[in-house]
Image (cartoon, rainbow, N blue to C red; front, side, top):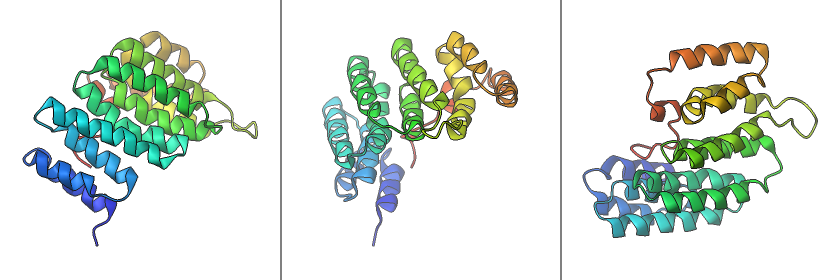
Length: 213
């Protein structure tokens, strides 16, 4: 039996050469998580705007079936990136605001940061004000202590990983965030910033990948 993962991967494998077949296959995936991803991959390779928009609309609707804020926002990053790649920036802005409102209801900073990392990757090629807004929300979640009062080690790790990409979006923000990291973390981040000077933004913040599964 084909799993959601296998079917999504099949969509990714044929989307470039058989976009309509890929779209029809995506619609047949039962699991909403993988159906949303597959629809977004198909949308990114659609050859006409009407088909692309219809697939993106369906993917966003399917994402809401997951209900938990962090899962909805994470998987919504796939159709959001399809919107970014299509250059539909006014809609990108409105969807970002909706998703930021939704993720704000997630009490766990770890889950918020996990979801916002994907949202940041999706909007990084978008207009600086939109990408910068997501970057600030992501950084805030990464640095927020856990409910127990302990440091958010996972969030800080995510922030270190993403800081070179954030620097491309808002260099002042990136510099201010360095001071919020531990000395060891700031040192690692400084080295990463230096090493990433000539690396394309989509390689620094590669999530989600609509070219492959």
